[in-house]
Image (tube, rainbow, N blue to C red):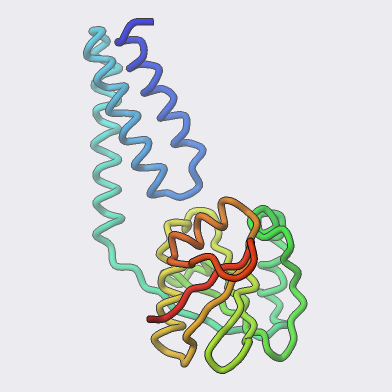
Length: 203
């Protein structure tokens, strides 16, 4: 296979992969790289419509990425009761996706639990269920973000707010899901006692 063909295939694969991304920022970035690669391929082989079309798509992606990174986002926490109708609807609606990342999760709250929606520009982008262990530590029972908002901003906001506005010093979580573990590590969690246990400390 010639180098030119490899460039063409690489561009096609990247564009295809981008369309499978649920997070809009990842979709735009990967699609930009794929379109740029495919545009170069088009010009190399003399297929000007391919080159110009994908060059235009590159510009479109750049425009929207600039708009996304420039825009100021507003976050807010909305605490709800355990019997809140929308909370129950949200859990039922997203249950299958929740189970992908938290297969052992069961919504069985008691008086030590707190359930909070994370609003992102007024959209309920995530749900956090926490259990208070003691005055300085909590256990995350669920930290779920809906597709399209999985760019780590929601998690960072939640954990920073917990540390900055409460007396909590330690946040514990458990997971045996590789994707979820990767997320926890990106949030700053470290391995705790037990193979599937993780801890985030306010230092």
